[in-house]
Image (cartoon, rainbow, N blue to C red):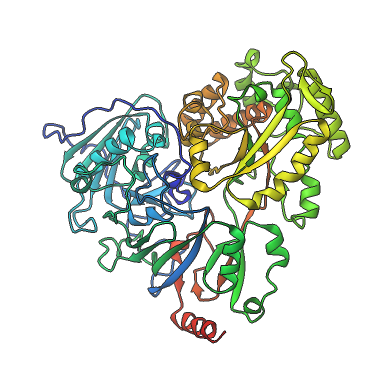
Length: 619
């Protein structure tokens, strides 16, 4: 999965936890460099990277972009109490990964290719059992200390043993990390034949050993840690804002992967408890940039003076990645949701056609696949190689999976949906008693509480709960502050909540984090639903080991189909584009990259910024 998708930056939501015994990472003077393998400037998941060794900048950037200005955006959800985004404890501030560099950088115009950033060259074993990176001698942390292979090895051990459990899972197949000398680091891999593993180890954030070895890495802190990236922390106002400033001494500003990028002088994240208040702040010019995820606002909300005067613009940017799966997630750890018939029945109460017509201005399409809008999405009945793969698990799968096509053919009419839902609940042992749905054997009523931290989802949740009530299900919404919300997720203390599961065109190790048994009971796991199925585990393992594009597609379709018939969540909807509103002071190169918008390639037009600021002062 491309670094542009920031799989490693999902720290506030990221998951999976177990500590793994890694081999020592101290320098090994006797270890030979693998000089028989050619040193290259970049790697691709399949085939070769598109850009030559002497490329001067990414094709989608303006290498002469001006620098300076400010971009202010909202962080919605309450507050923060930590500037360490790599650990479980605390709520990290937004934007912290701007201060860290990695060994490699991805090109948003390629599905998954990486080019050297901290590393000036790399050597990959033809059998993909190890990779070596040669660090640039000029690479520096923001306090002036050189970045060495010892920092890389230390960062790996620190993150996988003391950091968010996501790192332990993500890099589970790394057997050893060795600093061969000050400038060369080697990663050795288990015999898993994961094609992406050599590339994703290059996405490892590199932290300064000299700074962290005397500090408690596991404790939340508000210190302005030194990184090595293009921005440094300039201001920390807990719970209110965090500000990053462009580092004028950034060591990598002239590298091909950085030229024309990170142009904006200050990045400001202002904190708002509610998205409606953040929307008013944007209209008033307090915020410069927002991703507009609300269809009603996009359709009718821009009738305000600044937009009519041309000071505010809207952009709809096509999304080249599979649609993000957003859904109401069942907590399968609860006895209530153990029976798949109950989960299927409750999913039928989600009336997407009504929501789309009455709330969303017909702006969305229903999400019907975990790999929506890609060649990895399952369709129809299983056939060919996918069928052959699933046949090996036939005795562990529902027969419906082989007999009924996907997308699953549920009625569109709400009355028919509720009738089918009631039949499923009766099959699961429920009956109506004094207007309530109770289990015939236990006498327990069927109740559902939906845990939220944002009032914006309330209008989507309430219609579903009303439909559940028509079946006799007792439903409620619990809205809590972001800190309590995160703590409850860590303890899996919820019936249902809203989860997001982003996918790239090259799914891999992060799928362990989403779906596997090993993640099901781990605090802060992204396997929110607690799914534990050996078939899913086996398919995820096979997906990670896929050695060709076709093998990956076939396995992803099989995994998609199995997940759909599990009914672990109620999928929402998607638009196929990213909707952005901005105050018109920014410039950007066009066309946009094919596989992800690169905000780092934008810049501020100083004249337009001054004009907007002057007009705002007059108001």
